[in-house]
Length: 407
Image 1 (cartoon, rainbow, N blue to C red):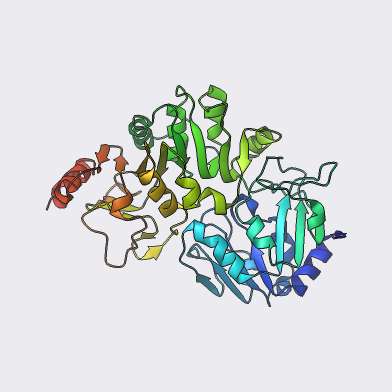
Image 2 (cartoon, rainbow, N blue to C red):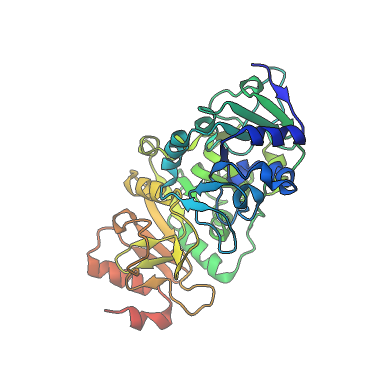
């Protein structure tokens, strides 16, 4: 296939010719489109858009979302964002099927500069690249010189694309949390570190807790990583020699600072895979010693987890949490851990609650939770009766809330 090189005007024409656009999220976001469309939002006013934008990371207040005819996504629309938006309820593993069913005719994929053989890599994210390319007739490679070259599953050549666009916009970044954390996060990390042994395979989300946890694991050895996302905080483990040198770190996307991206360039100990692999129950079932560490908004005394709704507003989605919690719970020698501060940001409202409210989603069922960790300790729920689970969870709640929580 002859690849047509285009400029910003050519990008607009591609969008005008499109009917159904898949818009990749996380660090695979095609950031240059925002500036191109901003001064001419009618370019997208006819489009049906499916997006894997993630709340709190990718911008929903952009013309690609607010001016499109209709937009479907997998995370809730932020409070101040506008647009004709609908949210599909799905775990992250189910997103690929939804993308294939949507059958976008147009996709924009940020890729590294082609090598001498014309091979490119999907930059920082392979999450849904393969799934979105299946149906598209307009496949635009956004060639970003600043993207690191990271090995990925499968071969991707620039001549597989119909168009190419050279772009200097830096990829979306995420500041490292590092070892300098607040006392609550530090206490949670201390408890978590005691649950992790050498040779474990780790999955974590993003945020302060994983960064603080990694800073506590630098003396561990032969740790492995299999996660949907790897953040820049993993660099601490690599440079401390805590990661198993004979095992590749598997993830669907990486996200961190621009300095982290430069550090990644050319490394061979990371491997990008699509969500179809990283979150696949069949893949996860083969991992022994998988320890999953994720956060939540609240946990009730049954051990049920709500990671989506705070008060009367949805602020997140299930994402990969159900996928990985189930896998950790079932992994031989592994476990599923939910780690959260004992209170909300006000310091007044307990995040250990008697029962989830009637309209709160159960993101993770009680049967897939092995440990709950707060700054006050560890609740081991394994092999416990309902009354014993209740007592264990009350013991790690805010002390002032324990009497209210006691049945």
